Image 1 (cartoon, one colour):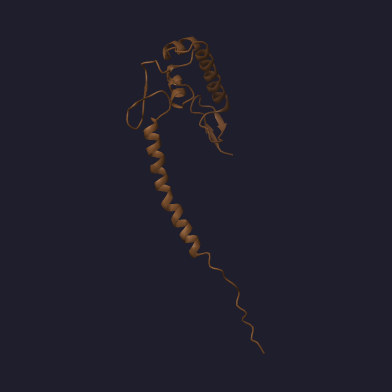
Image 2: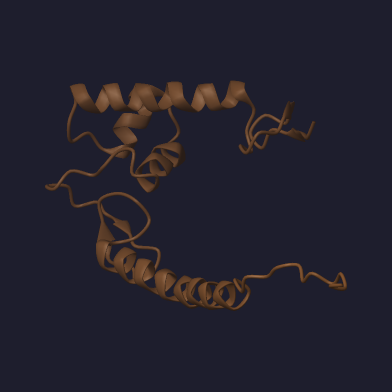
Length: 137
């Protein structure tokens, strides 16, 4: 059993791939629901307004934007910056252009390894058998 400290509250918990305990993860999801419900009832609200009304920190609301769980409206003058090129985006971490380029780059980096494994498996795919070494009389 792998025990770790929660990155939010410091409590010890059984690690299962997340850096936060189940209590903090639940609170994070509850806060997201508050933000989502508020935005549903008040479309176009600013980050500071949402934060003030829901009592969810602005930093956490920005995190929801970066996770692409919520999106900035078309008519808003506030935009996030693409982490790669700096272009304004409505949600997520990368603009569509950079995301496509990175997908192609990662695909190209992985492809040669996949092809070399196929060639290697062809070489080692030679059929073998046990030779009958008994003397024939």
